[in-house]
View 1 (cartoon, rainbow, N blue to C red):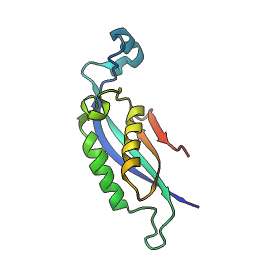
View 2 (view 1 turned 180 degrees about the vertical axis):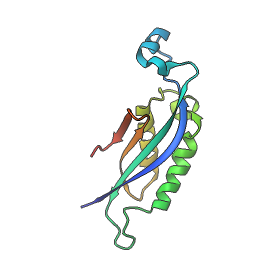
View 3 (view 1 turned 90 degrees about the vertical axis):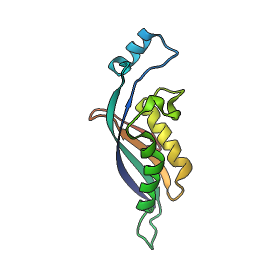
Length: 136
C-alpha cells in the first residue's frame, strides 16, 4: 500500500495564446479572446500529488518543508508574476495551461527524489483545470 499527498500552491502569471506558425485569423479562431495581443492573466492553483510509503519514523510520505522549498525555488520563483510567453520554457511552445502542466511535471519529476510524483493539476479558472501525469 502507498499513501498520496496533495499539496496546493498559488501563483499568478500572464500569457498570450498565440502560435507563430499559424495565420492571424487561425490564431483568433483557435484561441479566441486568449489571443489578445496584450495577453491576460490568471491566478493559478497548482496541486502537486506525490505518493510513497509512509515513513514509520516521521509518519509522512515526504518532508513537506523540502517539498515546499523545492516547489518554491524551482516552480513558483520561475513562473509567479511572469509573462509566460517570455519564460525560456515557452520560447518554442504555446503557454497553454496544458503545456504549463507538462513543464511543471517535468521540473518536479527530474528534481524531487523524496517521493514518487503522480501528477500535477492546475486550476486556471473556476471552470478550467488541467492534469498531467498518472491520473488516479
